[in-house]
Image (cartoon, rainbow, N blue to C red; front, side):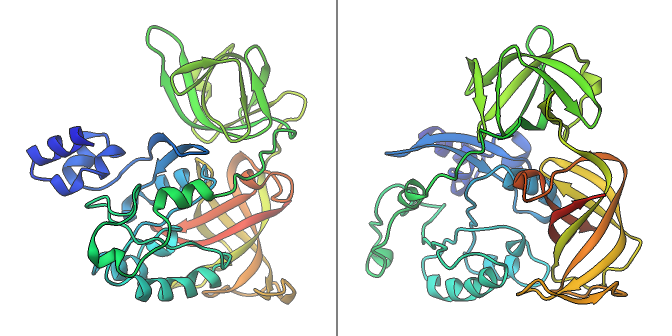
Length: 371
């Protein structure tokens, strides 16, 4: 931290020292905003943590989605005076992120307000709220020393909360599904792909298939934390070196999968969606941008199958003319080219989608049928 404190002080941004741990590029540090997904690692008393820092600025929400879809636990960081209102009120990004608050003087005010929204959005009531300071580091690793906080807060530090999270069950027994998040050239020759092991496992020497391009390849090497390993499992963030495939035949958003059990590909599927705070109703033929893991794809809502009761899931109306804000429905979505999708009941990670229009997230949903 001393290094970041000194470097940020040199350009008059000393208050950004903690942010510089993950904001590594010169442009991010100069502008004072996160633009890409930063990654760092640390260890608690019981866990090895990979921290993904996703952007909060509205211009970089697509990158936020890529970071959020890789996470086991979400932390929503917000709350200095004015920032919470800007992020939470209509059109703000706090409603598009999730789940940690930081505030010293308005903790209860913000917790009460956002808890209502989180409950309506489907989050469990076990959400943990922790007051801390990214400016001074108060209550992040060590118990608060500032009198203004220690007088009324006796709960855990942020790191203690993270340490107490229960790790989700890893679907290692399912077929291989690896989401391609980045493609880069190796030093010397060749190339590698980085991404997230969604399900299954992979070993050096395995023959795999890259979809939707239907390109066979062989796993030449696996790297994690700059170290060569022989196996990777569901939940791991790794880099794969491939042979037998040209780099031009790969794209961000592709899926590396098992030859024996390839991921389904389609240009049409149905999803159970929840509509957010939209200004214009959703109608048949509406053009959207589909987000799924690191995939960003133009799409069209080609059919409004049924409007559903948000609580029970029962059909209220078949073939509604439109969908307004805060409604739930089954819709049919069509893409121009084949994409990889799974039914949510089979592979949750590849069965979740988000729909955006003109830079605003209008709905999120679960894939229920592949047409």
